[in-house]
Image (cartoon, rainbow, N blue to C red; front, side, top):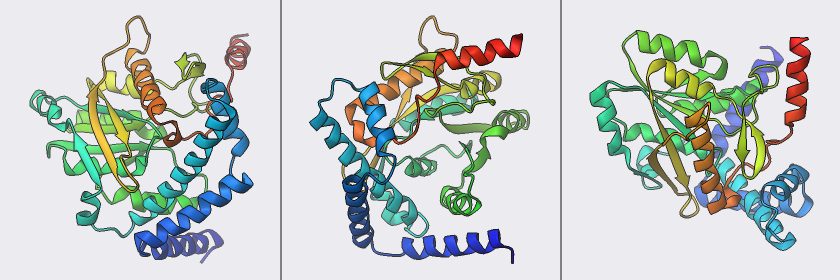
Length: 305
């Protein structure tokens, strides 16, 4: 057995073992982990603080520190809740997740229309694939993901994301896979988490909008795919009403007027409202604004000279 396979086997076994611990024990571990991260600033504290300073300058130092502390608590909870997905029963999980507005999809089923679902790294987004329980059976369910660079972590996350039966499509294969499924006569409903920084060298960074009050690049791939297959666009408004519980509401996206990518821009505006409702639940540790428009413009100019 090579080193990578051995590492994957060990990490998977540890994750599965941890997932079988009772939830109160896992939450105890989460509380200890969040206290360590907050007290000793051991996980991307500077990134989180800088993002909050830029995106929510109206917060006082005290309010910002409170959000950061709550963010670490939410992040640690999300880690143990995600691990628990390896072993928790459907019966127990169904008591923790609630769904609203999904009856709207009946019209799309009747029209034979594919659906694109936009959501953010907000709340525990790994619970969102549980929507397969309430989706019309006519849909082929899929989710787009960006593989981890670490093979062992990718294997664990693949197992977690596979438990709800949705197709897991790597980001780079999304366009051709969804077009192929459309050509095969399958009606797809596909989730895109599209709030992270676009890949440098992958997506051309000429698409910008204002998000959280900041000039922000975005990848329009989900909208381009949706337009190609004739999809309807929805936003999944995720909330965490209490610890360990998740509420998911389906909301139609009304396209933003005067925009080149009206559904993507509208989605980002909807996500911003969600974030401002409870800032601690968004992924502030991601370097969302590390790309500046000047750099992107310079790169584009270099390519054309």
